[in-house]
Length: 445
Image (tube, rainbow, N blue to C red; front, side, top):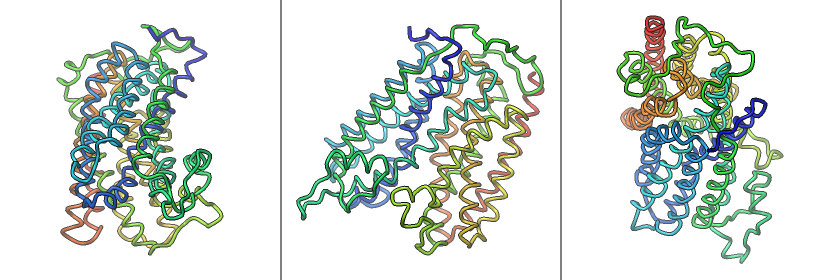
């Protein structure tokens, strides 16, 4: 068994969680693959986007069996399986993807890679919450913060390395240059290593990084609790009883959590899917980043700001929910996000773009701290892996609805107004659902 814990080392589980999640979070930077694959194979935008849709769907669906295995076998083994699947997806993709076989990208990056993310994603969350019943919201936020920040660290270096090799000049990137570009220290020299070599490199890094982080993951022994901590009484909003997934799914509380997650995540993904082109239109091609920042300039671009605050929002809302309770935090978060979407249509100045990017990222990130914490509060931590796997299927639904509906609204109107207004309405509905969750939790307690 991989569970031989010592209380003083429980923070090492959080460190392992961050390592795993940063690697997994690179999935949100899928857009960096789009142009290289279009140029290489002549594919249209829809052909490439299906790979991302398959990845999100596979991610959400795989969370259910992965959660069940995590509860039985422990997080280390299951997360390692996820790392191997994720690495394998890129290695296979480098070998079999070509212009006549877009299905090979759907199979490798989409289905196999998405499954790898699903297997590994649930493990850090479940293990961290079991170790920190006294700080569920804060620790869940920390455990998933890396996922929000993964794309921020990955997108810039990947964009450079995915460029074709310098064939005309005969130059090639050496290992030291690849390392410096990969770490974001330098921008590169106008050429890279090509998509196939990058897939191989990234596959090795993914597998190695996730398995390294997995070595730090473990579950506490049954009945363990932090020294000096007394479990709270069954008060409003905190039932604490361990329920299996059958029992959980038979409760109105679980159904409302699921619906709330759908509305909140759909609105966020609908807006974020339009973020880059909308901000580019407002900024008219100008950059926030001064030249001297070099490769680090991506941290102060609109998408970088959104990603950074996406990560911070997971910690902020998780910690706040420990103080004011999960449904209250959800209600405040969705109301704030809804109002932000409603005023986004009039954003014009650079300062407003910066504030809007930070505000939207902060609130969207909170979803991924509050919903696993709420699942643990209401249905216990014993079966948290599979229980949250079922709740997380809401994100799979949102991953399809959000981008598609947002894209349709833009295609029909030719403007971003309707997409953001609709996203705001969904946030207000989610806030109303959070009130219902609060009432159902009180009644159940």
